[in-house]
Amino acid sequence: MECIWDLDEDPDGNVQHIAEHGITVEEAEEVVRDRYEAAVASESSGRPAVFGWTSTGKHLAVIFEVVDLETPLVYVVTAFEAPPPAQAKRTRKKR
Image 1 (cartoon, rainbow, N blue to C red):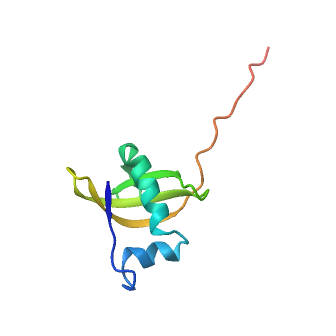
Image 2 (tube, rainbow, N blue to C red):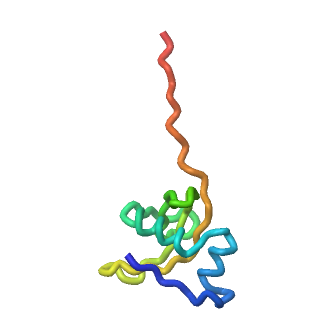
Image 3 (cartoon, rainbow, N blue to C red):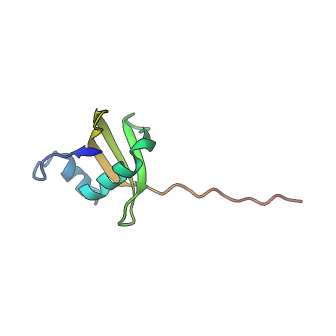
């Protein structure tokens, strides 16, 4: 799994964009690599999205575009902290 990144200095690039959300390239790549096979369509853009934990303790959403399926090679569009999935509520049966 490889991710494509714009130049760090590009003010309109994806590196600067995720930095505005407090996310590093390493954190975004970690989630994409760990969760690539579990990608779902983003509700807002329809692009592939993955959700997962980083080794730094953040739960991220990473939105990307697939550039090459064989490699696979992706271009990260954005990444941001997202609420973790809610734990299933346990209910007791009433007698």
